Image (cartoon, rainbow, N blue to C red; front, side):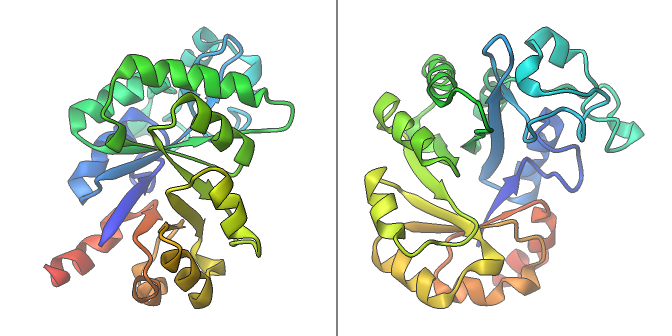
Length: 243
């Protein structure tokens, strides 16, 4: 039973922070999922939303703020007093931690309206090259197919996963266009026949955001390889029973 820590163990610590990532191995997670976008000065930073409003004490668009400005924000206090002083991490900082933890990382490329997709991919590729992590420790994912196509050209050796809410009718054509490794979809919209189609075509199948094991029991039977969850700790009793 494979579980990815969604934005780290984001039910126990503020999402997309180094603290949340450090918790992942404690709950049996080999993989951590993170979200990456660019600061105004083109530094890949790890944060999900287009703005800093929800997960920091600041306001405004990530793309309008320099790394120095972003680092001045508190990214933990919104979650609880315990995490006061937590900072928005860079991709570079996150990869250094991943290497130290011995985990693998699913890098979701966040693309918002008016974003320069090519610039995002180029800057992420630079950081990946500098990190020198083994390619099997990395996976790119995105809802934006152009981003995955660009990463295919920049770093073809790193696997790619297509994100969808629900798997579309022409999924196989789209997956073939990026030489995809995996399909990532919302567990609530996955149908058994779709799962069968993806598995027969040779793709890994991952479901998000599966926070309650009892709601996805049948999905394992359909061939789902991985659950992406805010609550990996909820799967621990199930894993212990299996073992």
